[in-house]
Length: 285
Image (tube, rainbow, N blue to C red; front, side, top):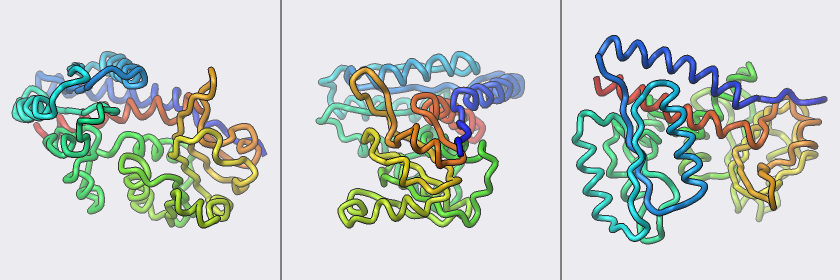
């Protein structure tokens, strides 16, 4: 068996075209377009790369994008004051606080002060609560990207065994809720699963396997169930090469569908941010 590649770049382009048309319609309807602000604190190469991708995508689909840069030694109060200001600015429809932030900044505390209707990453405490209750239209971006890739496979996830490796607040936990929404049977694995010696047995039975750990080539191809959908969220630099959490070549011989790294989940994540902005704009109007 040779897996079919779930091409994130092609998928992102298709979604961008749809969003571009939607923005044009919104402009006709409201004589206005969605506008967002990305707040970055300090200088981080990986963060700058993601910000540049956001800017290019925003320009392509026709929304307003601004990057507001605070210095590395910025005080938390100054950032909070700025967020409170744009929370109350009706011309701004979406806000994100870019990760990572310096150690003296409490990311969770600040993220929870972004107005829920403007929280484009869908991760403040109010929006996570809405996600649990299935009342949320602003979905965390990386989990939304994973779901778009699964959708691309054409497989109905109802009743499927879905295994998520990693239980972070921004990927693993919200993704498990989205999979439950689709009526998959969901198992979330983490460091304690590995310590108990049970990680491989869980992976062996996964019809849908998603890894979001950030450890290069952690998951061996021979562990993959034949015919599985394999989604690799991991982005890891090994010397001069970017690799995922999963051994791509060997996994491709067993999976039915698989995402590459790079060129899989990442490109669609940026587009999901813009989709959230459009949804936020429509709800605020």
